[in-house]
Amino acid sequence: MSTFTAVLHKEDDMYVAECPEVGTVSQGRSVDDAVNNLKEATALYLEEFPHVKKKRAILTTFDVPSVAPS
Image (cartoon, rainbow, N blue to C red; front, top):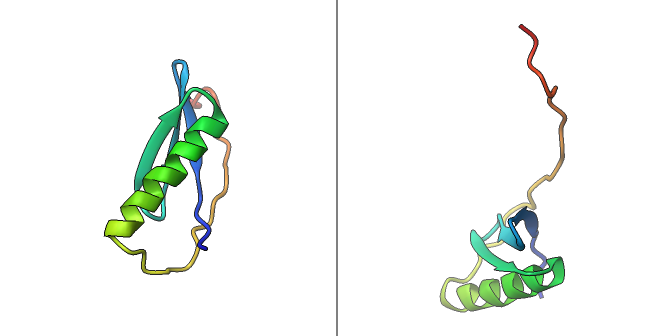
């Protein structure tokens, strides 16, 4: 069993999920649907293109001012 990252964002009425380690992307009407679809897409991808383990990505957030100073 391998552990991967899912990064999600909402587009209109769908959630889009991406796995940055592999590059797979999927979507669903809920977060759970999007992640489950991403798991399936990633598993199918890895059957054809086995993953070479690398160091895990670091995921963080940062703030940017709403209005840039002039």
